[in-house]
Length: 239
Ligand SMILES: Nc1ncnc2c1ncn2[C@@H]1O[C@H](COP(=O)(O)OP(=O)(O)O)[C@@H](O)[C@H]1O
Ligand SMILES: [Mg+2]
View 1 (cartoon, rainbow, N blue to C red):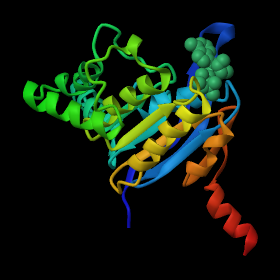
View 2 (cartoon, rainbow, N blue to C red; view 1 turned 180 degrees about the vertical axis):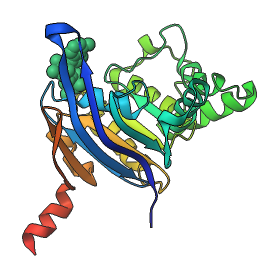
View 3 (cartoon, rainbow, N blue to C red; view 1 turned 90 degrees about the horizontal axis):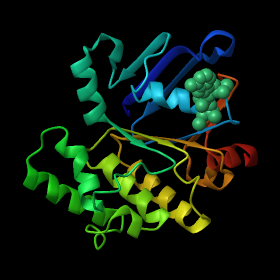
């Protein structure tokens, strides 16, 4: 049996103030198991980024529970929460969020430096992970010298270098052409084969469906379906 690496129970969250206040999440529950790549799909404004931010412990929900590795994060003091975020969760954004003044290798090792890893260890790990995303030869390149697809692969390397169990990606292929988008998704699918890791990808892009083990649809702050991936669904239809 695989372990649940991330669990959300009855999340409710509001954003904005006064007349602009909206209930972005209206009671959302989901769980991610090790070895899964799950897609979160839904229209613009449906609450995807809000949900991802709460799952990644970047935001605290108004109500409900987030558990990482079975532990409720609300019980952690701020320091323990920051540590959990650094060590167990990897975030990938649509717009890469690399530091422009750092080369690829230093962007990756930053994830280890902030947790006090020894410099030599961090440098070696960064080099190895860059090689696994196909950028072994680009370690000294700065973000401006890399294509969009390459920058996103550096961002993925940064998210996985610390062996995060939960990888959360908010429209990671949104700024990429088809070939680069496929390469990035192939990489994320590869990561999700590790039975101790789960990957959750927010996307609008139906071309990503073949990579999914499971697809969750969210609309207006509610999960409206949560089903096994297209391959599995096809099998169900053919049976
Ligand atoms: N800072 C904010 N203040 C007020 N409302 C917001 C804010 N950010 C997002 N919202 C609203 O919250 C809802 C969910 O937003 P979001 O999670 O960003 O959706 P998605 O990522 O699916 O496009 C939307 O109605 C959006 O307009
Ligand atoms: Mg969004």
